Amino acid sequence: MKKAVESVSRAQSLRLQRTLWGFLAQLCMLLILASMALAGFMEPIRVAHVALMHVGLVTVYVILIRSGVNLHLNDPSMTGAQVTLSLLPAMYAMYHLQDPQLRVAVVLMATVGMLFAALAYDTRRLLWLGGYHVLAYVLLIGALAQWAPERLNLRAEGPVLLTYALVVIMICLLGGFIAGLRRTLRQRNTRLEVALAELQDLATLDPLTRLPNRRAALEQLRTRSAQARFLGAGSTDVAVGLVDIDLFKQVNDTFGHQAGDMVLCRVGDALRASLRQDDFIGRFGGEEFLLILSDADPGAARQTAERLRQTILALQFPELPDDHDLTISVGITLLAPDETTEAALFRADRALYDAKDRGRNATVLLMQDDTNGTPAATPAPHGARNER
Ligand SMILES: Nc1nc2c(ncn2[C@@H]2O[C@H](COP(=O)(O)OP(=O)(O)OP(=O)(O)O)[C@@H](O)[C@H]2O)c(=O)[nH]1
Image 1 (cartoon, rainbow, N blue to C red):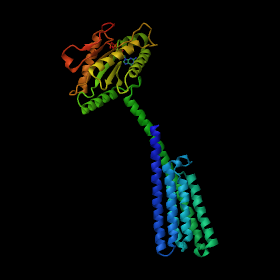
Image 2: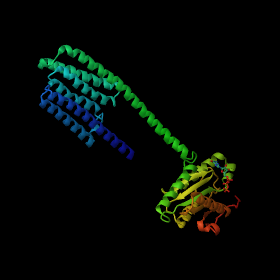
Image 3: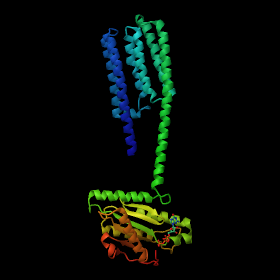
Image 4: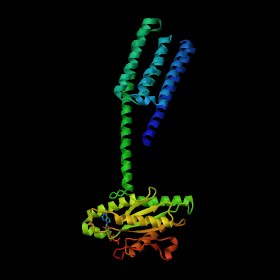
C-alpha cells in the first residue's frame, strides 16, 4: 500500500516536472515571437496574447496534477492534451505573423512538442498526433487564404507543408522506436528486480524451513551486536542462543528423511511463532537454530529459552507416532559489551553442550562470568543421557 502511494506520488512529481519543461519550451517560443515583434513582423499585443494562453494552459495543468484530478483521466500524464493544446497559441502566432517566411521558425518550435510526446507514446499514437499537427497547419493555410491572403505565399506553402509533414513523420517513427526501447528497458528492469529479489532469497533464506540461513543469521548477529555497542553497554542487551533438536538422527533413521524434513519445518515455524517480532531465529545448520533476542536480561533470556522448549514439547507432529516426544535443548548467553560475536556464540554452544549433557530437553543459560563456574539450568524433565 505504502509502495503504491509512493509510486503514484513519484509519477505525479515527474508529470509536474515534464509540464514545467514544456512551459520552458513555450518560453523559448515566446522569446522567438518577441524578437519577431521587435523586428516589426508581429504586433506586440499578439505576443502578449500567446503568453497569456501559455500561462493559462500551464496553470490548468499544474492545478489538475496538484489536485490529483489527472489521475481520473485516461491518460494521467495528459501528454496528448498538452501537446495538442499547445498548438493553439502556435497557430494563433502563425496566423498573425506578417511575413510568411517566418512561419517556418514557429513551425519548428511547434514540433518540439512532438518530442515530448515521443517520450511517452508508441508509433501509432504519435502518428495520430502528428496527423493532427499537419491538419492544424493545413487549416491555418486555409484560414489565411480565406481571411488574410496578403500574409500567404501559396506557392511556398506546398514545400513547407511537405517538409513539416515529413519531419513530423520522422519524429513519430524515431519517437516510437525510442518509446519501444524505453518500454523494453523498463520490462528488463522489472525482470532484473525480480531476479535480484530471488537471488537475495537464495542467498539469505534456508530453502527447507524458509527461515534465514546461517549466513543471514551471522550477519544479523553482527548487526545487532554493533547496534548494542553503539547504544551503550547494558541499555539493550542481546541474548544469543543455540536451539538443537534432540536425537534428530533417530527421527531420520526411524521415520525417514522426508519425515525429518517436515519435523524440521514444523519446529522452525513453531520457534518463529513463539518469538516476538523483534527477536530473530534462523537455521544455523542441520537441526540447529540460532536465536537472537533483543533487550533481553538474563531472566528474560532464560524465560524465553524455556518457553521455546515447552512449545516444542507440546507440539504435535503428524509425521511421528503420538508417544514420540520430540524435544529441543537450548543453550543461551548474553553478549557482553566487550566481546566478539564469535566468543558469545562459542559460549552459547558450550551452554547447549551442557543442556545435552544434562539429559536433553533442557535449557542452560551461561553468562560470561559463569564460564568457570556453574551455569544456570533448568533440570531435564526426562530424556536419555547421550554424550555428544
Ligand atoms: N531430514 C533432515 N535431516 C537433517 C537435515 N540436516 C541435518 N539432518 C540430520 O540431523 C541429524 C543430526 O544428528 P546428530 O548430530 O547425531 O544429533 P542428534 O541425533 O540430534 O543428537 P543430539 O543432537 O545429541 O541430541 C543427522 O542425522 C543429520 O543427517 C535436514 O535438512 N533434513
